Structures are given as C-alpha cells and as structure tokens.
Image 1: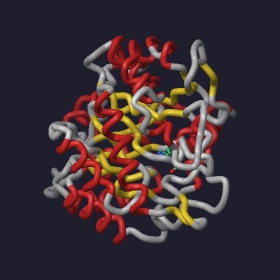
Image 2: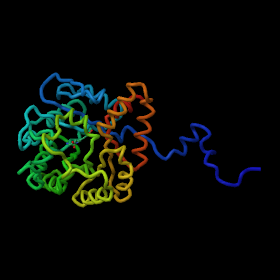
Image 3: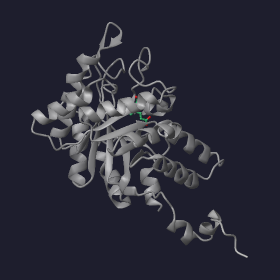
Length: 322
Ligand code: PBG
C-alpha cells in the first residue's frame, strides 16, 4: 500500500526533478566582480593572499572587461589605489584620479559593462581611515562633503552606480543631494549599509594598501555581536535614498542578510569578501576541498539567505566554468 503522507524524497529522485523544484539559482548576471586599479602603465601585479586576483593599471584592463562580458558578468566594482596619499584623501575626488581613469578604460572597451565605484577615503588617506581625522578620531560630518565630491567625480567619468563603503552617518543623503543637484538624479546608490568591522577584510587591505595606520574601524563599522543594528542601518540608508542595500561580509553573516531581506523591498547585495575568498583558495590549493563544489555551495547559500546581487572575487572564474 502507498504511504498516504508526503515524502520529500519523492522529489529528489533525479537531477531533472531536483532542478525542477530547486528554490535558488545562481545567475552570472547578478554577480559583480571587484577590481583593484593602480596608477601608471603596464602594471599587472598579483595580490598574494588572493590567488587569481591582480592589481591592474588602467591600460591593462581590456582582458578583464572582455572576460566579464564573455562570462556574462555585467558589472565591475572599482577600487582605486592612488600613487600619492594625503591627510584628506584628495586622490579620491580628483576628476582625473585613478578611478575616473579606470572607468574611462572600461567604457572604451565595452560601454555596456556597468562601472560600479567604491566611494571611500581609506585607500586615499595617509592614515588609512575612511574619513577625515581630527584630534585622533574620524570626523563624520567633515567627511560627508568629500564623499559627495568623490561620488560626483566618479559619475562625471561615467560610473553607472556609486557604492559608499565608508560607514559615515548621513553619507547616502549627502551623496544623493549632490548627485541630484548636478542633474544626476538617475544614478543609483548601492550603499554598504551593513558593514561589520571584520577580520575578513585582511587580504583586501593588503591589495588596497588601506590598513589604518593607528587604531581600527570599530567606531564606524559595526560590531559583529549585533544584528538588530543591521536592520536599523539598512532602514536609515533606505530613508536617505539608497537604491540597493548591501551586507558585508557575507558568509558569516547569512542571518543578517536574511534579516535585512525581510525588512526591505529594495534589492539586497551581499559582499563575499577577500578573506572568504582567500580561505577557499588556500584550502583548495592544499587539496583539502573541492573548490568548484565549495564555491557553488557558498554562493548559493548567500543567494538563499536573501541576496539578489553577489559581489565576489569568484565571479569570473565561476561564471566562465558554467
Ligand atoms: C573600504 C572597503 C573595504 C572593503 C571594501 N571597501 C575594506 C575595509 O573596510 O577595511 C573590503 C572588501 C574585501 O575585503 O573584499 N573602502
């Protein structure tokens, strides 16, 4: 006699059946690939703790753009590393700075690839903090106009989306107002709304030379013991005019992605950060894990938790192998 009750295993009998009822699918067109750009010419410099990731000068970007387009990855997230750093991070908002140069190089190669820019001061300041420092502390309000200027310089150069990652309070509103005043009301803001103070950023700080010279970022980045605060931060950014909210890092914060997803109708992005990438690459290199399977599982989990968009250093390699 047949059992009268529902048996989940009935739907797992074949790959086709499993695919038919799968709740989550990974699409390369929802990936963003981060890139590090240095000034100069002819530079392709590997980042030691991030195998497969290089720092490029703008003239060396063409193959990356071509690969993204071939793999179906629609967007690049640009991090600039200037030749000179100073107290106020003036390289961040220079109209001919390293990020504007990268945007122009990308657009020259393929105007359909979306140029997303990280808006922050830490790569540009001599002290490595994400804002202007006064009396040994980051001055929130003095930083806002500089962030707005930075976003404007990026959009003037052709950026499609600006992504403030500094975690100053009020920066989304400041950037939105500056863009609107400049007639750029159609440029979206992807806010790093929920950004934890995290050891998972270690390899990035090597790549971007942006480790703080003194102290840490705990006065402006979030405490990983908290998740209610994440929901509050995302709601504030939404009120200030964010078009996409982001959670970062991703893997140790799946509960936070789900919580943010539940309280906003905006698209949610998750940043699978440098340390998460480095751990996978190191274990794979040692032959301890199946890289492909692990990456699929990790990215699917981030999606399943509620992320619409995934920012990941795995994007090109993963999409290419599909
Ligand atoms: C700040 C910024 C950081 C990352 C993205 N934007 C570093 C930090 O806050 O120290 C980290 C990304 C990663 O680890 O992959 N501009």
